[in-house]
Length: 403
Ligand SMILES: *Cc1c(COP(=O)(O)O)cnc(C)c1O
View 1 (cartoon, rainbow, N blue to C red):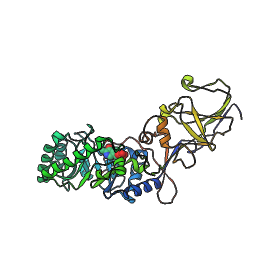
View 2: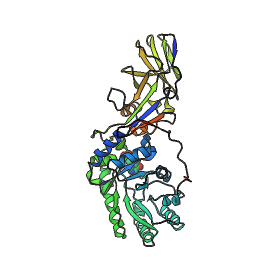
View 3: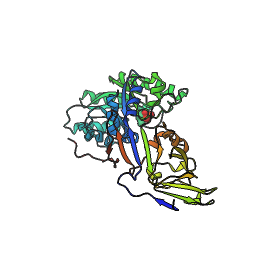
View 4: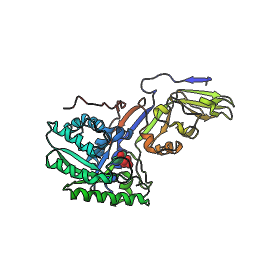
């Protein structure tokens, strides 16, 4: 080997790639749907936790989910423009959000305040829409985050009932969210469940008949059947993240990167910014063309590993924006060899959970952080060829192509 061997440029092959195996999403969906008598809403916010919102949505709907959930109206409209016709709930929007667009696209809206209710009612009055706006009243069940405060709940329910009587809205659901569901012993769950039960009673007392009553996300779905009510909202679990450590879910992500160059360095050579790592002995280093802009958390510097030439290898020095350096010791690699940065773990490669540990963060942050330069391919749940899909671009604020 010369001092610096460089990979030939090749179309497509020379890029970091993320393969999404939808068979894992299908298996996780079936497993989770089998754990509850409630309906399963597939939460596909943040581009389906980085897995492709439409692909995860379609797969989940084919394997046991009956509706979809997202954060913003814009995310819901993207699903509609991708041809998904299942019920979609959008639960977090400012008061000046595109409610008219949402109603036109038959998107259900979560309502956390009178101001939000008024905005939805105005959009419905502004019609013409075929039917009354479908809303889920959102109660804060103890996180001091989204949802109405208990002190405002009764008035919100009464106002919603008046709008219902006027034929403007239909309250089809009541929702809450638990902040500590991954720790079932935490008192916060008791309070959350109690407050949710109270919220449903108050809604009924106001004359509302919400058929969809939902409190549980992945952790509560897996650990606490008392929180299931008539619907559970599951996102992380569908993509193989188990915040409870109790359930054999499977990750469908494999992130690979080609070796760009290989060099031999002397003992004492400093590597990368700040020379955060210095070779203790002569060694061989391989360069991978991805870094924190591509989703490798910089906080994992000094701990991370990749799989290359059949073995785990340390990533040395600081992770850069675009580059990672792998220590091969006295082993050899060729430019063009492919490193597995993360995968399901079947062949000993690092997993999403490993990267999260190394960076002292959550798997959720790792999967939603994979950057737009990474080439995405999706393997369907049914046997078939992998098909390239475009990298997610910025979500459009308004989708003018909607009918
Ligand atoms: C993200 C989210 C969910 C899904 O949570 P997971 O733990 O990923 O299943 C459910 N409900 C709300 C309100 C959320 O924001």
